[in-house]
Length: 146
Image (cartoon, rainbow, N blue to C red; front, side, top):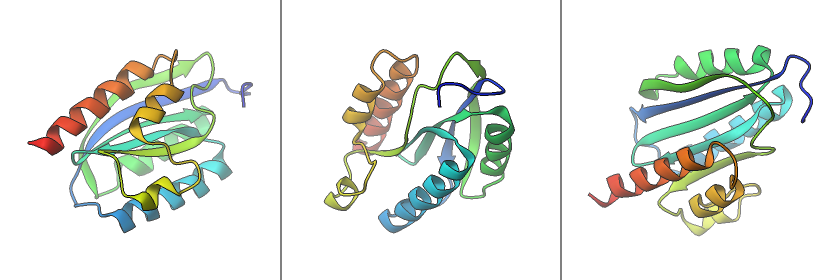
């Protein structure tokens, strides 16, 4: 996964959920995303908290760009804002993970590849995305407390 024929490409976005995502819907989203992304050789991270999504997609441009277009057309979220879009020297996430803030029920903790928000930030230690993930997690937790 370190060597991309077209170069490693990444899109980072944030959006607001239009519908209220319950645990079952988030699990379904997780499973569908993992299946699709594995076939397309797309890695990254998806975080959800406080009614907001933040996602990092990485892979070859021919896979990442069409996926982002499909995500942007999804009516379950709005106010989509692209934070970053471009080539990068290497992948920062070698697996597909989904995280929620605050900590989810025990059900999510038993899902393979699931990382809690603190684990996710630690996994990204030293990466350029670590600060962004940490800020999203903090802001999402604050929104849920209000």
